Image 1 (cartoon, rainbow, N blue to C red):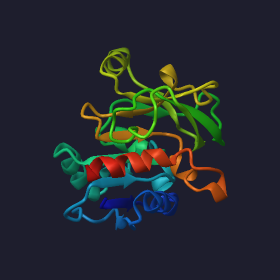
Image 2 (cartoon, rainbow, N blue to C red):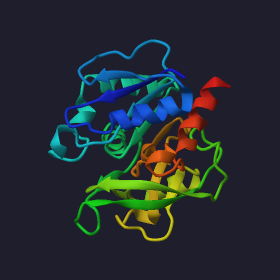
Image 3 (cartoon, rainbow, N blue to C red):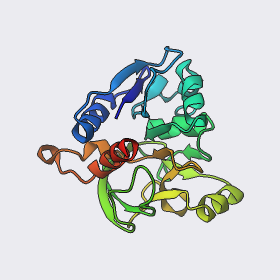
Image 4 (tube, rainbow, N blue to C red):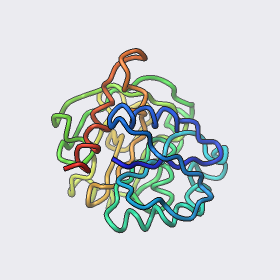
Length: 223
């Protein structure tokens, strides 16, 4: 799988993401700076990693969504390319219009840095085929603005079309509507989620519960 990770001023999870992709594929992803205007040819996956792009000024992800590389990411997604956004990357996807809704301040108005449990709502997407539907797994929350929100019409569409991929199991600490932790595009090729599965891909640092997301997408593009 040929993957590229895009970094922005304030990104801090690109190395964790690179390790997760390498664990799943055995290949090093390409690192791209946000000032680039084109993606390399032959890419299978573009990743927008976590962090605090532009210091989270304005709305989280709003400034990064206007970076030069994002026009190429939008074109890539429009052609059916796979795009994964985690935490700050999820915020960018909503700000760029690639996924609906918005990420608001956590209900507690406090930064959350802790493990959480997610439930897999769909096991038929490119990112979840190595899970069983209804399975739960641990990942790490590290955000101040992870409270997913959308209007009633959008929520009905997401639920009706089966585009909620992950929900928080048990306590919904950030207050996301319907306990939504991750959603996908209509074609399921663009995925955004707030918790960090890349933190859980190595038994030496806490387990491998998040690895199936990366092995799933690698197997999908190889098929």
